[in-house]
Length: 367
Image (cartoon, rainbow, N blue to C red; front, side):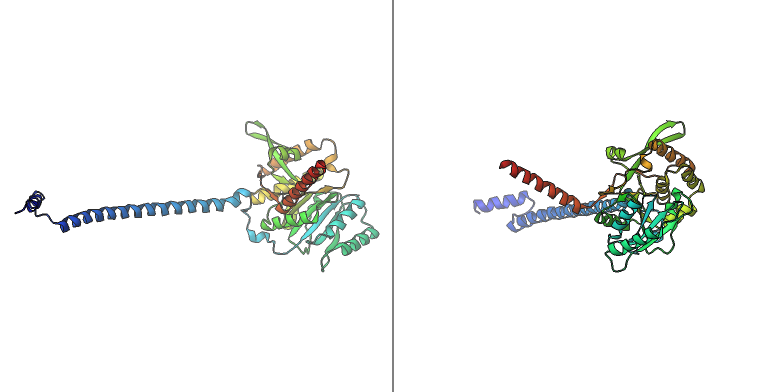
């Protein structure tokens, strides 16, 4: 027996049998397969956990997305079927008072806007409008309109001077959307069309160009007082809770709710104080929807030189109105927000113009 055979036999005896290369390979392969099975199981478990993690993440994102409209005030409590925006276009509701020259400019402008399907002038003066004024405005509407079917034009004549008149129901309207505006406020047609498109996405809320806010004032035990914040408050805080009806869209159903469903004590207050009908409308809409309004950032032009806001002690009266209305409601329904709608096209062109001006200025300086 050779030495190599003797070593092989001894090795085989040590391992409990004869040495065999095939057995050795099988043993190694078996160990490797066992480890491979364990590895595959671990990898399967890891994949399962990863899939579970991804599923949970997607569920979380879905939940977050579902809550975004609510946080923006677009997920409204009122049934959407009650505030249809299916009828295209809008009716411009112009509130006027002894400023016929401004009224002529305002009517001529809004008649030229493509989405205008009707223009109603809220007339609350002692004397009715003259035939010459009515004929002039009717002819200007027909001449300025850009649509095949001309807008309906009408004076809504009231027997008494009352700020509540601007929110009286209107019969046989062609549109669901009302654009409420003062006779001295001009909103460019493209800005108006953009705001209307925003309103169509949320027809039960107010969409406007003039934001206002409320501050929490003094707290005395269970009583809390509030302060009315003007434009500079909105600019400083970046928050608002109202858009004024001097330039705002809302659903025509709110005219009936304001006149026939809102507490008479609030309308009586507006009649007595000759102020704050716009705050009353904001509270009404917020009370119904539980949602904030939507501020559209855009250019508006005030062509008048005076109005109620220019009168002495106007701010203090607005503070008082807000607190008195809260007392009548029993709580404050206004919902603050810092969301605003911006037409990115205008922002882009504005930035482009500024950039061109800077380049032109640098070129001129170089010469």
